[in-house]
Image 1: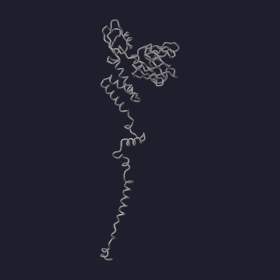
Image 2: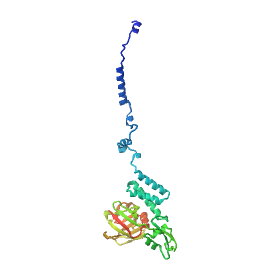
Image 3: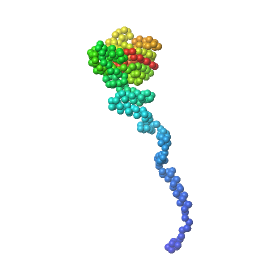
Image 4: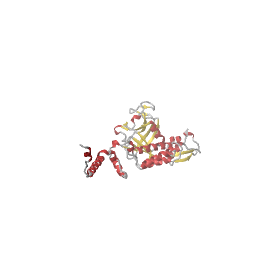
Length: 316
């Protein structure tokens, strides 16, 4: 074959535009379905509403979520807690108390309530055991012939609390003209056998909460009582009548005893009270013979500020 015969050959003049269009469409489909990354499809497009993003997040299984995504307390509750904590750190205890009480008044529960109660108990003990002013205190000038016992009885408080708060070393050596700051708040106690705790209120507001042990087989009586006799370092009388002195290993009453006397509407009971224990492991359980038992450090604190004739309610 001669070379000029190849040069004389000519292709048809028709252009394959239809084939090119088909190829382009096929390539686009392949790119959309195969090549494009799935993660690009899952991302919210610009302008997607917050509600839609939340809906997507809500569809994630709980076990997949991180700690940062765990439910948080409402903003107002968290804000009040932070404000109260800041005020307490600045030693503005009355203002901090108001914030914590406001949280309890809202009926918050869970960790927020627990934190508020612990802080309130801490603040209250600081306030009542010092001469710091608070609305529930009055300033008293000792008159000639007065005693701490008479002053305590007049204002419904305890000699121990007046003595501790005012740094009185000897309660028998106060003099006319001495200045005292005396607590006047009114307390009430409510014990729950189910929760094994004791809640103290002051003027109807939360004051403190303590763990207690109650009677086995539900033996702790329920009803309305009055706290009467208060004894430091009590002697225990065994059921057989034998006297067990304070400090003896068989004495189960701990460091303090407070007698409970049934009030109208509650069957009369004898021998029941609130007392300490050397067995801290029994707190939170129903293991006593019927009395309410507390850790020694807790019953000593309660004994310090709870006066005789304080009402006590015991519920199931």
